[in-house]
Amino acid sequence: MSDNADKKMRILIWILAGSCILNLIFAFNAGQKRKIAVSKYDDLDARLVEIELRYKNAVQSYDAIDKQLKEAKKDLQEQQLYGETLKDTLQKEQKKSQGLQEELDKLKTKTTPKAAARPAPKPIVKAVDKPKQKASKSNLDW
Image (cartoon, rainbow, N blue to C red; front, top):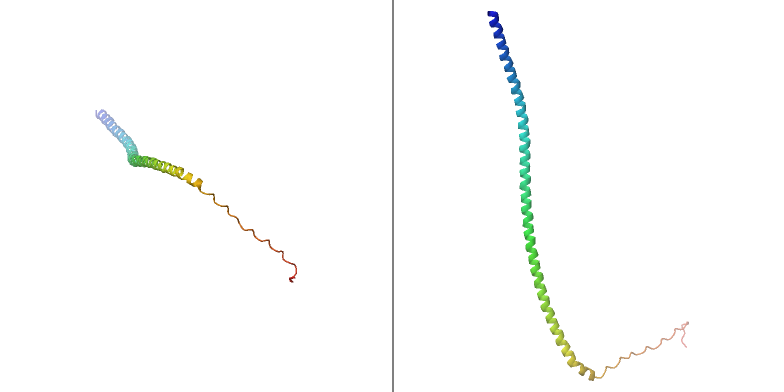
């Protein structure tokens, strides 16, 4: 009976040893998978941080562009108001100029009969230059 008990004991020891070896293999395999998962998690975490940073930069850029757009709209409105003011001023000046032109025309029509009664100015006559004498070829004068 001791042989049977020894055999059973050996079988039991082999079963326990085999299960321990299998547990070690499973544990090692699980450790490797965990290491891979942690590595992927770190990569994903780094990507998430990068995406968050890009998002923050995009939001800041959008805010800055939105602010510039609002300033440009404000400047455009000011320019339009300035243009309208210039148009109004130009129209007023044109009306003044037209009024002055009409007054000038009235004054011209009143003064033109007097100008016709005046004698015409005499033409200016220029004096004719005397012709130059030709120089003689010799130094002696006769």
